Amino acid sequence: MRLIGVDPSGRLRGPTAWLLVVTLMAAGALAAAAWTEHQQRVELEANLERATGAALARIEQILDEFRALAAEIPSSGDIDCSTAQLERMRRQLFGLDFLRDIGIVRDRTLFCSTTLGVIDDPVSSSAPDLILADGIELYAYRSVRLSLNRPTMVLQLEHMNALVDPVLVEGLSSSPWLDALQISDIARTDWFALYGAPGNVPVTAPGSDLLVGVRCSSTDGLCLRGLTSPARADGPVSSGRLSFVVLGAVAGLSVVLLIQLATLGYCTPSMRIRRALASGAIKARYQPIFEANSGRLVGIETLARWPRGPAFLRPPEAFVSAAENGGLARRLTRRMIENVAGDLGRWLAARPEVSVAINISAQDLEGGDLGEALERHLIPTGVAPGQVVLEITERSLVGMHGPIERLVERGYSVHVDDFGEGYSSLAYLHELPLHGVKISRTFVSSLGTDSPKAVLVASMVQMAEQLNLEVVLEGIETERQRQAAARLGEVTWQGFLFARPMSADSLKAFEAALSGDEPDEDAGKGA
Image (tube, rainbow, N blue to C red; front, side, top):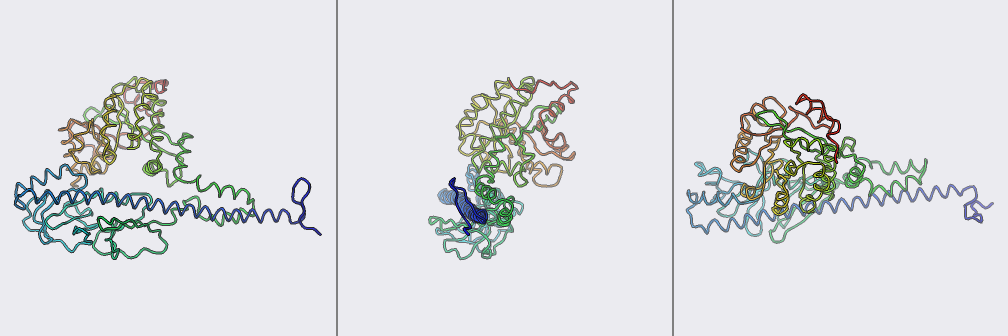
């Protein structure tokens, strides 16, 4: 008996025909799953290499700045630790991007620094973790007294010692593709952690279950090793893929095959965000900003929220970071501008004393079309350019003087967001056409306590006033913080103590309740 036959139309016939089809589909589904897993691993390895390379490039910039400074200090001819030398070093430090403190050392003993001045009891250093090709001694990640025991990198060369900005060192490991970052000399004998528990003990060799990316600089004589878990290649929705394919072979292997073939492109963070932006799943929420002295509503901040997003991307900092890494930051900003125009355009136009803050990124400034987007969507609703505040973090300011100046010429205001967390020098901020700063909640949360950060907040406010910059305090959540902030002078503030981020309708009702008026149902609609 012929088990398998073919009729004139080309259809399979015979008692085992469908069994053959199912078997071939099962084999294809399993092969597709294996190929997808391989491709995701390849992509993860490439991202790991890029993240490690980016961190190495930043360390090369730090070392170049340190070398240039080390060459300048002896040429001044000043006596070590003299008043003239300390003043000269402080002026030099003021214009640096990466170094936070400069000191004079002899035999690995610190005698003075720009911050501590002349040290009565000089501080001796232990042996460095690494000695680079040109003699620079590198302490990878140590706790230091100057940064309130916040670990950072220390560089030393014969007569000079420098402390790298701790925020910058922490930022080296902030890539979503890095679980750990380690540094070694070109020989790669001992590796030292650049984040985590500080100390001078080399780390152990990475386990076989980790992916490793190594990038080296022959010029500087050092190497970086990035580590990440292969589990990142799977993602939370793809765990147990092989079991799913086997079970799917019983229920319908054709569907499983199509799903597996689409998984690689369909489930990446960038694709999820791209679809969410297209469908409107990422929405704008608005948090009021108040004048401290009068309690008046003077502004709102536009915040992107993804209420129904996947758990690992739902926090704003997660999907905003993924959007920037995936080149979608400009799309996200455009969506927020469109939301503001549609939700609150006429409402804002009727309240010229209320500003609207929109967060932007370096990608928005580099694209060059941010002003056109504002004038295409928001300005036609009646909102004045002077009501629009564009907020950008310190890290995104570098090299953006031209784009910022063009936006200011159009009448928009530019504020520095999360001020205090970056590493921009005060001299650089003064050169930019800025209108205000928003002091980070990291510092604001210390108000009303004995933390040294509370003193820094007062210094930041005073500095901003001297530069004629507006000051916004974000993240005020307790009455104690509010009382301490009220003593800082003419500032504005926002935080959960006053109002949480809310929808446009809730904002209009909130404002109406503050003013004692009935909410205007049509005021929020754009033109």
